[in-house]
Structures are given as structure tokens and as C-alpha cells.
Length: 282
Image 1 (cartoon, rainbow, N blue to C red):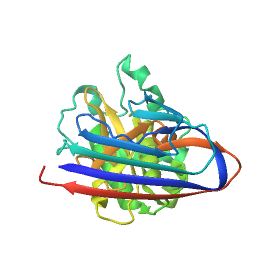
Image 2: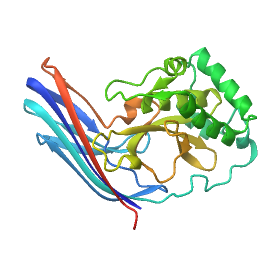
Image 3: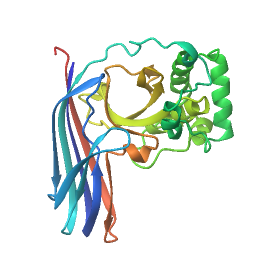
């Protein structure tokens, strides 16, 4: 199956501003789940300079800087990706990794420490993690499946096009949230059980053909000997070939598709559109 996407975003300012350096994370990955066949990124005004960089989670990002004032920033990405993973459970997890709380051998444990940090997780979410793990008989894979389905079944989904994700305890207590809110709740709950988890941004193939498509957010967990595997609590499932991953990070800011500042004090408005086409014959 091949997925083709055109994603356009325009930031408009009431009067001219000076754009500070921006980071664009819009290039989909190439890995065991998906293969990037074509990619094009167009930015207006044309940057004074750009450089590609590999960020902390392996996302190929573009750093751009500007040298003239502007009243608009336009960003358009076009790509085609071939989806490769039909079975999200095409692996065998063995040994101590089957049981919670999960622990990783060194030096992997130190490397994954930021993704397992639960110091800022509220007590209510920690209690939620314990009860979910007990219901899953402290089995790692059952826990991940149970947690994803449980969030999907108990949390009402809302659309919030703008703003950062809510803290996980707010989402848990209100039992509602956007896809990014649910992803943060999933990650924090996993971290309480020692499972390395990170936030992922990208596109959901089920939104193809819709006029109100948005970028989607979900989570990935690191399984020993297996690597990063994705779960989408907004859909209650383990991710296979229905999600195009673009960027990932411990914090949602590190997976933001466009990040940057501007000087000038003008308010801004953002307009975005996503057009997606699915070729099932491929």
C-alpha cells in the first residue's frame, strides 16, 4: 500500500515580522514499517540558508534561517510512502521483558532513561498504571494492549487543533482529550511501569479523502530486542500500516512538525490543509 500526502500550512501575521531560525520535521521516516519513495518541501519566503540534521530520535529535520521581514510563512510538504508492516506483532518477546515492571540491561537502560522518567507523573496516573498492570497480570504485552484499548474506551475524543497536550492527570480525570492528550497519558502510564515511551506525530491513513484532516499523534514503546513499536490509544490498537510516522521525541515539542519563533510583536493566524491519497493496489 502506498500513501501520498500534500500538507500545506500558512502562518499569517498582521504586519511584517522577522523570522528566527525554524526547524521543520515533515520528512517521513524510512524503516521497517515504511519506506519513503519521494519527498519535497517548499518554504516561502525562501530561506537564506538551510541545513539538514538528524535529531535526537533519528528524525531527519531541516533547520532554516531567514534574512528579510515577511508577513507570511508558507510551508508545503509532498511525499509518497510505501507501508510495509501489516502485522504489528511480527516479533517474539522473551525472558524478563515479558513481565512488569520492565527493566533494560545496560547500557540500554541508561540510554533509555529519559523515556522512562516518571518523576513528573501525577500520583493518580501512577495508581492508574498499577491497576492496569494488575488487570493485565503484570504481562508487558497484555498491559500495552489493555492500556491502549482502555484509554480508547473510557476517554471521549475531542478536536483541539491548537495548543500543547494536556498533562496526563488532567486527561485521566476528565476522561476526554485530543489524540495528543491521549498519547501523553499512554506514555506516562507506560513510564510508571518502566517501559520507555515516546510521543509520535504523523498522519493517519483513515483520514484520506476527508476535508477536515489533521496531523495525528500516538505513542511508541521500546521493547528489548525488538525496538520501538507503536500504539495508538486514540484508536485502541497496536499500529501496523495505517499510520505514517514523521517525528518522535520524549516530549511533544521534540516531535513538532514546525518549530520556531518570530520577532515583531504581531499576532499570527495559522491555516492548514492535508490531502491524502491511498493506493491499495501497490
